Length: 334
Ligand SMILES: Nc1nc2c(ncn2[C@@H]2O[C@H](COP(=O)(O)OP(=O)(O)O)[C@@H](O)[C@H]2O)c(=O)[nH]1
Ligand SMILES: [Mg+2]
Ligand SMILES: [Zn+2]
Image 1: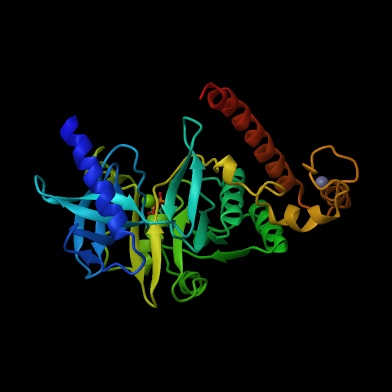
Image 2 (image 1 turned 45 degrees about the vertical axis):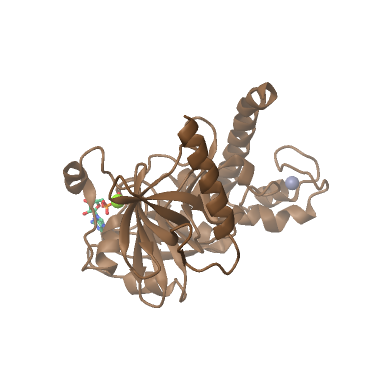
């Protein structure tokens, strides 16, 4: 206990020493090195040092949350053949969600782009798509819709939904990891230096797209590899290098996604249509639910705002209120 305290003090001292803006990447005194997290497996991870070495690491202490894309400071753990992550450097951006305990947590960090993947099968849950788009807009990430498995055909109702996204200003890239069609357009959607994450429901083909773009990489696709990996080593997220300094993060499939409510843009919740309409609402704090003189409701009545997108906005507004109410008593207790 006492030893742990002393060690903690020493780490803090070393960290403060190392946080000088132009400190060398490897400081002999503290023996720390800066690295980027390129894969996470539960609490374990792989980091890549500045010289390109890939090393195993794990966070030092329970309170440190480290995600794929993070830039971290590490020190060797002499007892194990791995590094201790002692500090997460400030994130330029991150995708945050509300976890099952109702808390906000980052999923991936230092992104510029979010690629929200959907497919004709499994049947798309567009409310999940909308919540990813809302989180992206609120975090100032560029978002692109990726419609995979295009060779299976897009039915009229999905085509109508895609048209609504396009009218709202989103780009939808149609592609197929199976045939390779459209994958060049997908790459072209990412400018040089972009850091993108593939997100979306399980089974839409995120890992298959990575495998198609980077055929030489070992990418876990579908159930087969998941079983092979076993329960304890399931990859949470993995960063792949693309040409022109671009990066692509494959994240695990999810059934649902709730954005971090405290990070949503308060006026529009990250709905781009609402953002452009809200300036014309009578009240500056209009929630666009039942308020008089609401420009969002007016656009809905006039048929210029897609009803399903508005329904999605309303559900997220309610979810945000429910989650804030649930958080209330906790905060009072502190
Ligand atoms: N027909 C078709 N199937 C695909 C395509 N891309 C992926 N799949 C299949 O969809 C399933 C899930 O793919 P996976 O990449 O693991 O999805 P992830 O959960 O989003 O990473 C696998 O059986 C793939 O073979 C595609 O373009 N067309
Ligand atoms: Mg996958
Ligand atoms: Zn309004």
